[in-house]
Length: 188
View 1 (cartoon, rainbow, N blue to C red):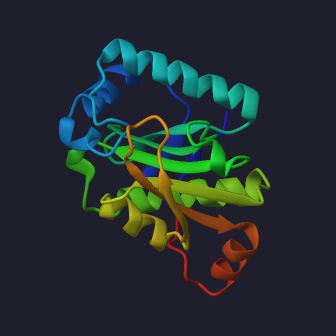
View 2 (view 1 turned 180 degrees about the horizontal axis):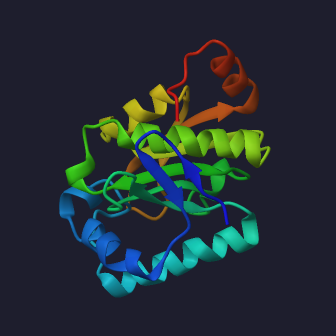
């Protein structure tokens, strides 16, 4: 069982008691605005998602972490790694992503969590490259990508979203190593 710790967060595998708080995150239209078609998800859909994320851990050796606030034990959302099968033109690839509840926005938590997941991707799983994909207009996520040392490499259309444009960012293991050495990456 992989667990990562940062100054304010614990990134861990999923538990049954995470379903309800994650469902609350997924039920917020503002949180879901930039996720796929912008639709919210109920508890049953959230449970199925968590089960799928846990399966990825077993088959891929990586997945999405539950993000817990260290000081309170509260589930804030998720961050981690997955294969972006929904955008075949970037494959083979591993995507880093995140989703936090609105009460956790604007505090640098997504960047802190994602930086730990980036370190995990390169230092623990030996990945050569990671990508991150955001719908054009999702400036908050793009700012996090830039803070992580990622660079925009293409803009394209999401094939399943009726023409919604997405921007793909990328970070190679070499770029990551140079950024770590130069102290330019946020500390996880």
